[in-house]
Image 1 (spheres, one colour):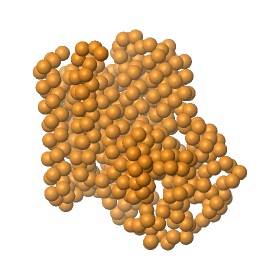
Image 2 (spheres, rainbow, N blue to C red):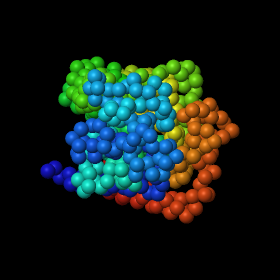
Image 3 (cartoon, helix red, strand yellow):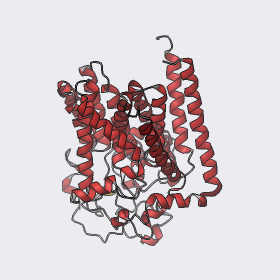
Image 4 (tube, rainbow, N blue to C red):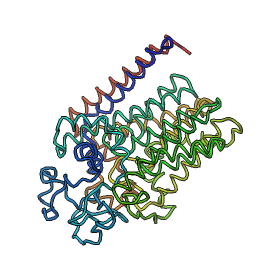
Length: 491
């Protein structure tokens, strides 16, 4: 074991534990029904040895008013929007008509018929990643329809996955800038994006995407020569990320564009990484190339989607995270930088970021459902933060005015996301109308989502105050520990 190896490992473990604690320090349960099938994946795989959710569902004739508040006692309604029919094509009753009580998203598959097996519409990646965390709950015979267990155990799994992603990203940031800047950017990533309000809070897919993307960046974002073995492993990471969310494949294309020499190794790795998704689709749907979402429409006018994703008052990336203008400037700088392995990779990743932006801009539900902030675009946050660190290392914020503007903008984001971490509860998204059925509300500057969250802070009372003190203490402890290390080893 090399000298100093154990202290370095311990340092990263402590960092990770503090980040996991920070995910819980907001003392607020932030979740949605989307996370239920992702958590139940462990129960069905371990207890039943299959991927269907039949054992968790109820009859079709349960009145909707009886489902509220006692959903898990009755079983999950088969027509819930996150379920679809599955099994061999010849046995599925997809033509069965039912008066659906749970509205389904545009282009989604129809609800299962009475003789159908029931599967999740979501890809299995995040459920697979959560297996090591949730397996002990399954083996301890915790009831699978205990909503508290599903939410809290899923929260723990998401927090651990996101902490691992943050640690990998932190390591990459340190390659391009000082230890102090790397710490500041790692905390800004965790606290000033959707990480604390979405990705680390419940078992959505975002933490898994962040882990895959951060892992790939850790492997290939260096100025030194990158071996084909690293390109291969980056391909595996992004292929596995595609098992979590299919759009991760776009990042793989961006990494490949940045280094054509490693294209073959990256493609081979990506193909191997995506095999679990193909195997799951073959088992669940009888076709390795069918995916659970159905034929989702991409018919939003591009200009509308771009404005919504970037500048709308209740979903705009540059409204919630205006400091990322500096990251976009760094990507432009990469195109002007000429040679250099990292600059070349960033050029490819900038194309991937723009392609993802255009894809989601045309998606029928570009706003990402009932959620706080720019959920979809924050899947790409690790790319922008690496670009930001690289740009800072090249003097992007060297001027005092640029430095000051950056931190003023970052301060705005930190305030918004901490407020949401403490009090966000989806009421703005559903009252007086549900934004999923009235998305025009997302463009209303007179009543933005973030303002409703800020106004809700006083109503949080003592809980918010305790959460604020606890969160500040954890951040202060992390900064203190890092400060001690920086003084002990200035390099």
